[in-house]
Length: 179
Image (cartoon, rainbow, N blue to C red; front, top):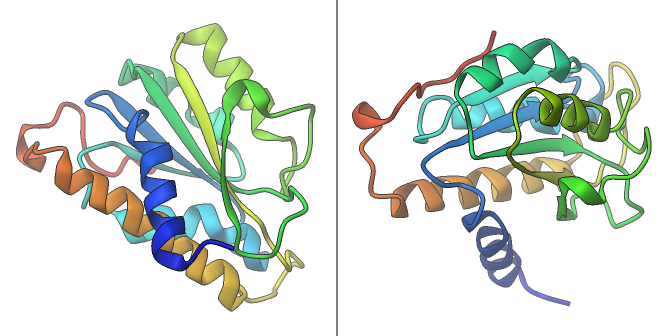
């Protein structure tokens, strides 16, 4: 089983090809339902500290399609709590084409419906960074395993931002676009 450093490096490698000059990060989830708040927690932690627009889409990413498409991204990365049967807090990158059906998102339809709508409006590369939840009951707290996963995802994105060598003031359409 890989250690924390190896997992962080693997996550960074997996994201490196997607987080280019023209990327939008879309964070999805319900922060009132425990681990389902992983996506919004990533959005909050990233704020405006990265050179890519970050959209805190909560439970309705389709409501932000116009704003996302306005950036004309070459890639869109969705960060969401998804149940893929792994240990809580496991982070897995899944290609947008590999997200099947209308499940397994913990708060409603899978990211696939959103990604299909996005592709109809603007063709771009997509991927989902899934964080395996443990508890998503309304009113529950985020579990330590998922909180740690959020920190790993945020750390990987920030590390990639540092290597992007692009000052925040020079980026196009940047900032935290929360709606």
